[in-house]
View 1 (cartoon, rainbow, N blue to C red):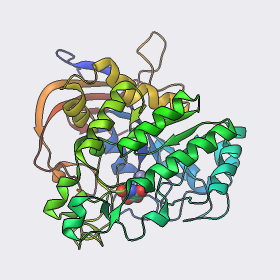
View 2: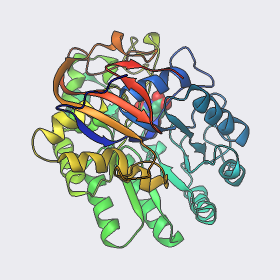
View 3: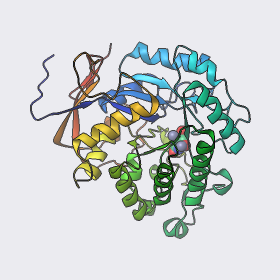
View 4: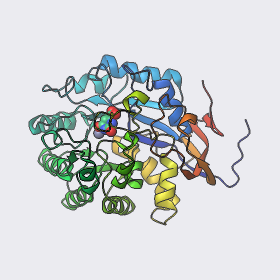
Length: 392
Ligand code: DOR
Ligand code: ZN
Ligand code: ZN
């Protein structure tokens, strides 16, 4: 196939540190195959598939299966994220070593969607991870502060009678785990930073020499809790959409490098789990096919990030954080070609129905967004081109 690069911008393939692919367990909402297709179309060459599947990815049996299935599909490297503990809200550390040394070579472990609340478990996980050289990623939710919480604790939620999710539920864990990382002398990664205070805490921790990194999602860079007015559960997500002042602070923190990277938290859900009462709906929104366009819209267009910076926050930094040697590299002689070519000027209208994801829970429905992926290449093979995937 002929690749026309005129007017295009060439970047290293994107690396998503935070994707939910729902296989095994909820293949009615997303599979490794459909999630891989969405990733390739979104410009990604590597994604990290979160562990809150059913069964939970807490053993090498499961993490190796996810890795193999991803390689079989061949559209994107699907790196399984291992669970920190055995099972949901586990009290016992999982076999991180077995997962790290299995075929999948698991590099990241997280409590996302599983919730490790016990600081002693987190402390022991960091020590275990230090020995293995793997990353621990923290969902950052103090569950005793989020009992029944469904939306950001603020005026918008109060007006609708929705139970609030306070900033402190996130920030108290960020502060706690920064200190645990300090004491362990080892790095910790903060998932989906959603408040100005989290950005401040990460900045402080970095200034103290604490090994901490953080990601922000496209939706927390774009949307705020004024969205609640529609009472549409498509806007329900954990952590919740915050206030306009948080959104501005997160954009600044990403521009300054306080927040290291953008991660999607791509979270497919079935229509019936999203169309019920707001309080009963599942939290989460799709992200893989809209992430780049949101970053262009809210960060590049206003001059907060250059294209060089886009390469950094979408690819280089995430690859570094997780230690992927063949991803996130500038294009150089002899390097495997993990690339994405972006058309910066094309505008398109978001239609959930058009996504290759099985689910269509996008909060950006109907929005006109800038920037389209013209081509994605994984180790020299074109995986997506002009809006179509190229299966193996
Ligand atoms: O919004 C969210 N959705 N937050 C999480 O922590 C889990 C995720 C999911 O699995 O749907
Ligand atoms: Zn989470
Ligand atoms: Zn998540």
